[in-house]
Amino acid sequence: MLPLAVLEPGGDLAIALYIVSFSMFIFGVRRGTHPTTAKQGNLTAAAGMAIAVATTLLLDGIGNWGLIVGGIVVGTAVGVVASIRVQMTQMPQMVALYNGVGGGAVALIAWSEIRHGISLGEEIPLDEMIPVLFSAVVGSVSFWGSNIAFAKLQDLIPTRPLALPGQQVVNALLLIGIVVACVLLAANNDDPSEGLFILVLVAAAALGNLVVLPIGGADMPVVISLLNAFTGLAAAAAGFALDNVALIVAGTLVGSSGTILTLEMATAMNRSVANILFAGFGGAPTAGAGTGEERPHTSIGPQDAAIKLAYADSVVIVPGYGLAVAQAQHAIKELADELDKRGVTVNYAIHPVAGRMPGHMNVLLAEADVPYEQLREMDEINGELPRTDVAVVVGANDVTNPAAKNDPDSPIAGMPIIEVDEAREVIVIKRSLSPGFAGIDNDLFYEPNTSMLFADAKAAAAEIASEVKEL
Amino acid sequence: MDLITEITIFVLAAFVGFEVISKVPTTLHTPLMSQTNAIHGIVMLGGLIVVGFADDSLEKVIGVIAIAFGTINIVGGFMVTDRMLGMFARKPKPAETAKPSESSADASGSAGTREG
Image (cartoon, rainbow over all chains, first blue to last red; front, top):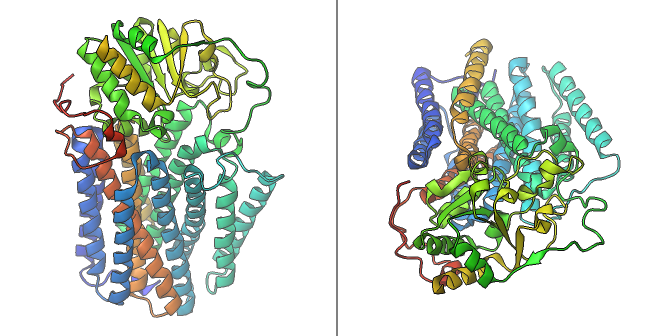
């Protein structure tokens, strides 16, 4: 048993403080169910974290204060600067990065646990050895996988799937190797080899890279959410090794939440998590799709669009990531305000995976001060679309493709979509007819009631707004 | 704590997690993900314990990196969540950002709240 894992005198008090701290995490997440209380909930969870850190620092026998303070100062500085400078559109890669450093921390802690155990020259009990190995492997996978996810979302490396021949075999062999090495380490728990342990860390790092590289950019949010769950579980495992109740509860909480979010996202894309991880989908050019023949479509200008919108009773705006990229949230909000002045009912239809992570689009629109009540979820708005005069699709593509419900052979067949084709008229604001992330042609563009407005989303929205104003 | 107690805590925490998080609406999933992400930064406690009791120099180095990583995770995670959630709270817009995107027409006067 590591001496550091034993709570010093006053241990009951320390545990009590940890209990207070994890209760605040649970309460904080619980408050996150409504936008008006979520901010306060987040502060509660942060305060809980401060209590947990303070409690640990007060444990009897803690030394090396210079190093501890140095680590905290550096980490705080980086965290503060990054969180202030990040733009809302970059939120997914920011979460990926934070998740990566969390995973890295777990893996490093596991390593020093092993080192410490070896240096004591005593047998490391299995109920400590196994969690340490688990957190080392999962933490390392999470660190490298998250970094790749970050690099893909930040366009540092190509977002298309990068796969080697026989990659699944390599991954399987790596995984088997890791498991065998871990079993060997656990079997020799009286004197485990540090070299073999480092080899495990390296193999897990390779696995993290190889698993995430072949996944397309569009699927990265699912990967991040899954890795978030992994890091949480790794933290919980570290809690087992360190006999720390705060780590166990907090890590498990994150494991649960990441699991739920991952499954929800997979459902929203109508695919299994296994399919997302191993199919190399999301960016692969689909054979034969959209190549060759030009299909007839109707194109209109901003004036015509303004007339259609101004004389409508109800308008539904379907925003996609393209809107965020064009920074068109504010322009769209202005257009909606102009329409509102004329008595047109405006709502926003939010697909569960609109943007780059679930709920991302809501954040982007909230940034532009769009009232929370106008943000409508897919299932709710789909019932109203047949009674909607004009649906405006801005920067969204695959999530409006009727092929998902009409064409059983389509790669996105069965994916829940926003059924804009049910609306009386559709205006699609888009730069070109090019396909979206799924790499397939959107049948919506060629429907008789669809008009294409080829333009940059922000410029087009501003122009339509000023046309509406003059009507 | 013995192993079986820890496993009990683990299982109960998993159920609590599922219950609490299932109630969060899709709208708030991005802040939720970022908040829970910050919470797993709690592994930083492990780094504190490692460094706090370390004699070996490599152990200290590893531990300090772990502390820095964990702190980035915690501080950055909570702060960025706070920024996002601040946007959901409807208030008269404090003129905090001077983004280039605001240059197009004035957006003032739209700050009045509308209850649905």
